[in-house]
Length: 442
Image 1 (cartoon, rainbow, N blue to C red):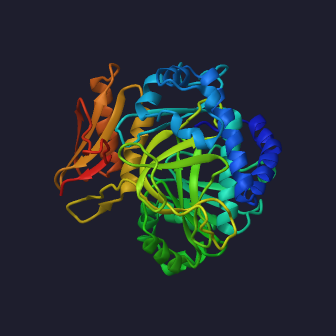
Image 2: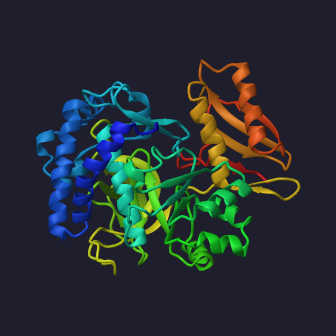
Image 3: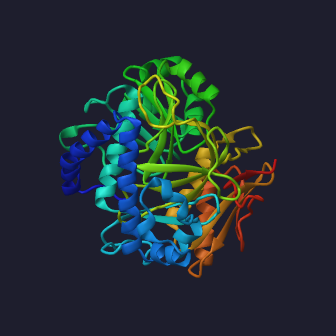
């Protein structure tokens, strides 16, 4: 995603405050009030999608959906599930709402468990709400988010701005692909109040920290936010002991415009029900009871440019009962268990390891750079000496691009492997139709 312009930052400052007040208030609603809000937003989004998005109109008509009979969230199962292929095949002309084109939206790409590239579009208003939603998470995790607090953000892409006007909410960016030493230096120098990064990157950075570094990082630190990868509560507890602050997990999705759920300081894993509707279904796509593990189906309630309604996200979750409360006082429902995809590490002959997060960014940065030339990818280590980058080429792929990709991956892996780019017809998947993008056959 591109950087915010000066005008967009000013708009964020004005409109963002109004959205913040609304999102803050929504956390205080009782269950009846929250359900009423969800019903109103859901019906409005469904009708908007049917009337303005060709993909939904065609799919709903094909399934015999009577749009006038969709009165609230209780009717959600009357709508067909949207698959990743629906988004891929219909982007952009049939998945963007009337009035939106690639000229007036921001876009993002994500790989997804199907092994295919999914492109998602957001309006400017959606981007503003996405940012404010993130601020609500930080406020929850730190028990307050004053505008002088600094966040250090370790990620594949740069955050769309370094601060709000007048230097409010400053942010330091560190590339995930930075070396451990470079990451250590930047992190120690930034002295953040909040640190946001992959769990595997936190593990990497820890290998380069001494006690003096840890003490320097702890100067202002209030919380560590881990995201985009699986981590165990036991791991987060261990990191919390090291840094002396809560280490909390966030679950998000590009398709769902950001965060779906996040942990509070009391450990409750809250779904942001005022902006996303979460269902759990069995292998027959039937909604299942609470406390049972099933597949996550989600609906976003604020992306008007590209509505996402009943979308098969590809992860497995289990919901706690609706009436189960959290010590933080929020009424939002909680995730009880979560099972995402796990990826492998790569290991060199000398014993050096490359974490899943680092390897994912090696692949994703190639996808972002060469998106017109390849449709999907997978990194595979077969031996201590050999790594393969399997990809499905498009008609625009050339021998020059193939060689450039191999050379760049070789450099990012510090010339520790013989890197070969292989063109394939399909990416290997599991019996459930999913795949890990990083595979080690050692």
